[in-house]
Image (cartoon, rainbow, N blue to C red; front, side, top):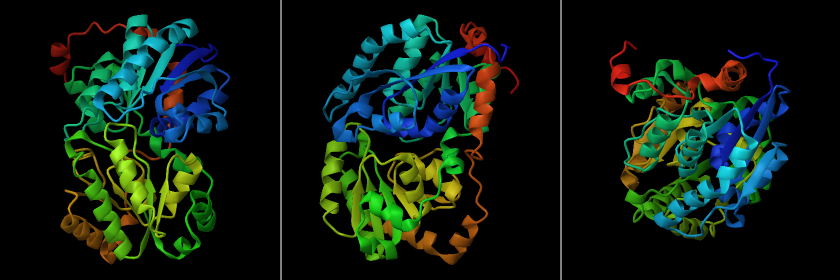
Length: 398
């Protein structure tokens, strides 16, 4: 263990609003801690005007930047995504080397996380991977990227015991894995409440939205459903409007297929009962969820955050299937019949009463405290070299 008096240099990588929001509570705590010299390297969609230039939210939070690296290749193809990762790798190596952090923090399952783990491994910098050990049975590239990152990472801060067990099955040593709960939930403890009228006004909803029940719809592209994704969105939106909801449509991420989805969302936004938003401040998004009756689509917010708000989630299609989920999350195939059936169920009084006793399997909203304690005390260098034989580890008692 290291002395608390030693100032540790910590670097984190972030390329998109979604991963920053998952980690922002921790980043702000690291910024304020006199025992930490913390910097954030931002890239990708953060710096893209067409994706809302979410880097401004980082600056508003007062999180210090190591650098802003322009990496995003404008395009709607798989090759564009890979070229973006290549840009990040080549542009970041010297920046990371010159800063020479004691540890790098990487979160999730996007390509930039794998890039960060590679940089850490080859430069001899310990890496701490958040949200590893998770798995969705959807065949999406995110899953092997997440697991590959875990194999490169030095330490793992995971959300649930199930994720710890999966990392053990991958041949990771138990001493490297810490169950901290999901940092994504901590923002619900910290973000101030906004009233319904202020939320509606700031998101850009018309005055008539105030009287309706709200539903949030966020759908991200997935290659296997590229041809039907717009139909899923339009079908769910139509049914929600028929039930009297005001629908808030969130912009998709930058994965291949996002342009087609944005076009579909823009068409739906012509209806005054629909409000399309791109990147909005974290506090506004948290309060939008707080005032909404349900969330649908295929965003991880339905699994991770919604249960903390006692909010039902209706998942559309293959994305997120197979992941750990609370009883408030219903999975559908995206068809109208399946969505109507799920909506009927979540609107039943018995289902609504059950939400009052719902526990979020991903944590209690206090994960930042656990992570900060670990970051202050862990000797990162002791975990840099991975010499253990995975075959031997897999046969150890768990």
